[in-house]
Image (cartoon, rainbow, N blue to C red):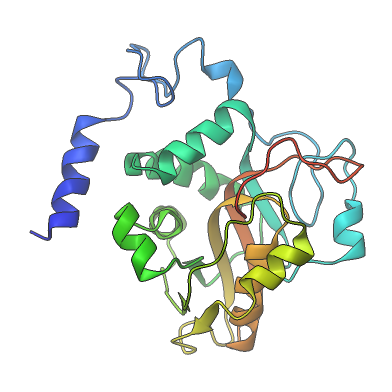
Length: 246
């Protein structure tokens, strides 16, 4: 067995679902994912949202950011708000707790059902170096769960050519410049003339999704929709509750 697969299997067995809280590790006995203390800190994105980027908004209308600079994807949806427990959950998933793919991916699949039907699902790639360090690509794991739940194939048309600088604290324009030409198409055939569902862990400014969607469109994708595990709440003044590297 490949050593990475062995370590992943061992990790998943050591941290099984529905026995301990997915956030703090406390024992739980009701079959849920969170203990009574942590559950209230995880906010679901089930209130009013921007109908384009899918981030929580004060009113059900297109946010000013989408009006000013329309994203490359047709529409997006996300399961959680990226703050407090939701942010901790996603960061835990990105940093070793790969078993959380089932919970987050299942939530994302339900959100994806609010989007138009897609022919296939793909993910934002990471570099080979980053994959070796982490042991997996979190977006790819989420895409695999989505593919299974939605009954569509998982495809991998993109690759990331180079490492990029940390994006925390950068504006969308700065993030786009940082990401410019970091992705390239390696297989056009799997997305050409198809409606594609792009999976990722977090949506903040949308710079990462825009760059990936640009390449998918160049490859011939008919349309690209986005679904993420979490998204940063939109604020009228343009500020976000929590920043990440997206």
